[in-house]
Image (cartoon, rainbow, N blue to C red; front, side, top):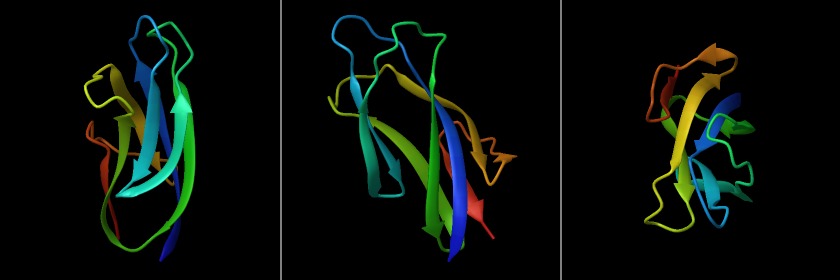
Length: 93
C-alpha cells in the first residue's frame, strides 16, 4: 500500500439550483459537496490523500442527480505528477 496525494480541478457549468457532486477514488465515496460558484471559468481543486495498492485506479466526480451532465475534471495529478487522462484513470507502480 502507498500513501497517495491526488489533486484534481472540478469544473461545473450550471444554472438555477447549485448542483451537488460526490468524489470517489475507485468505488470509495470520499465526500459530497455542493458546487456554489456560478462561473464556468472557476473551479474547485480537490486534494485527496488515500492509501492505495499498486495497480490501476481512478478518480470520479459523480453528480448527485444522475441526469446532470455539467461536471468535468482537469489537471489531475498523482503525487505531484500530471496524469494525462480525461477519464481520471491512473496506474501506481
